[in-house]
Amino acid sequence: MSEKQNSDHDSTPAETEHDFPPVQAHVKQFTFRAIFTGMLLGGTLSLCNVYLGLKIGWGFNMSITAALLGFAFWYGTSRAFKTEPFGVLENNMNQTSASAAASISSAGLVAPIPALTMLTDYQWTLPILIIWTLSVSLVGVVTAIGLRRQMLEVDKLPFPNGVATGETLKEIYSEGGEAIQRVKMLVSGMALGVITKIINLIVKIKKLSIPGSFTVSSNSALASKSFSTVTLKNLGFALDPSLMMIAVGIIVGFRACVSMLLGAVVAWGILGPIVLELGYASAGKNAAEAMWFGPMVKWMLWPGVAIMVTSALTSFSFSWKSMLRAFTGGKGDETSSLQQSDSSVNIPKKTFIVAVAITLIISVILQKSLFDVDTFVATVGVILTFALAIVAGRVSGETGITPVGPMGKVTQLGLGAMDPGNAASNLMAANVTGGAASQCGDMLHDLKSGLMLGAVPKYQIYSQCFGVLAGAVFGSAAYLVLIPDPKKMLLTEEWAAPAVAQWKAVAEVFSEGIEAMPEGALTAFIIAGLLGIVMALLEKLLPKKGATWIPSPSAVGLAFVIPPYYSISFFIGGVLLVAGQRFAPNWTKRFAIVLAAGIIAGESLAGVGDAILKVIQGLSGA
Image (cartoon, rainbow, N blue to C red):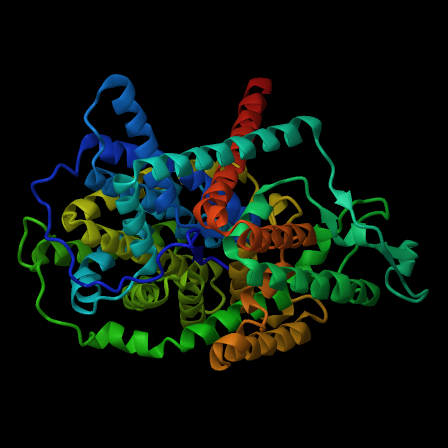
């Protein structure tokens, strides 16, 4: 799963008012401090999404977090040093740049990029990684330039995440007291996340194992290793001292959390002991070993990936009307306050065409020179990327969810048939599609918030480009520090990397055939794939009340490829959210998501800091 989750689900879900203010071209907005703040905040927050993405395959939209932090910093500066107040449109440029930088993880850093190294031993260097992620993201930015007027002004699509950000910015600047309280809660969460992570690193608090065991038969594959029982501890059922996954559970909501727990019980509690007995999956080296996640996930990832991929593609297929409208256009009012020809506020049409040509050529050259992708295949892939990014932008505008994963899988499946046996071609051409879809959706949501505030569109686009540059530098550096050896470090208890597992599995099938799958995995893959389709269909076709009782297929599939203690932490977070909504609804609505986002940011940054410290210690020791 590589979709970006909206961490502000309590905010306004859709914009119903279409009369937006005129463009405030005379108001200060595209300033050095706005862009620098956005690049610095976004680059820092990109570390959080890279860290979290390598843990559980999810990243979060950081627009509101960046807006609150930007407001807090410049509000404090103006109070202390009497500097000019940080205006709402400056803050809009700040959050536009920051969200672009923070979403750089979707440019491949938590999925196809490490998968390529695991399959082909390709070694990334920092300059190459920066250039690659930057080029992928710019394809999405350029696509968004061409879609802006049609989707925002003509079709007037909701883009709910952009509306939430726009409404938050309005709220911050109309009710300063409330904004300060939310900022304090965000900072408190960050401090809590940092402190608990540091304590865990210093004291090394162990996970509290859940008691229980399974007896294995005397003629099972495990019996040859002299194991008479498989404990819940071996399978990964424990309470994790980390607060981060509890915070993620608060953000994603109770249904996803219950689905995660259900998936963990089915995968690791029921299916796990069976595949161990049959010898389909390997146990740990000895019975005293705390967790057997590393060897077992090599089998478990296949049914988990099947559920996630088939359910995502099935759900995406229900957006066929959106896909059709992406190419035919909507039926919105053709009049608009912003004319495409007005170069004072919009990117000129000629500039847009040149940008499309340049990004296409650069992408093809990089694929050919870096990964030896056939020029024709690379060209087809980039053209397909432009088309699918349009689709992703439309779906994101109507639902609030950018289908990064499905877009990448469509390209993997299509180009896998064109160039079978080439893992690099399969992964990196699809990387362009998924990353561009993410950045395109992110750009359009930010342009929506700008439209609500009267921002100059071309300034937002410039801000997005600066943000992408910052994200490419910060995010790429963080990835190389965190994961210097993907083969040894990923798909392990510490770094479950479920998105990597998905991309790697699909590429393996196309490059090596089904014989690359472990014994028994093909049957499980087919059954789980069918289950994912059925669950997605029920989710879409049942009445709303009935659909809420259907487990989230993506969450169930994710539970197969991460340690069970993560799913337990998710569930705890979901329970805390429900309890808060029941007993303190006003506080929960105002602060729960902000506090959780702060905890995630704080613990992620502390984790990245620990990794940097280890690198420095290693270099000094050498």
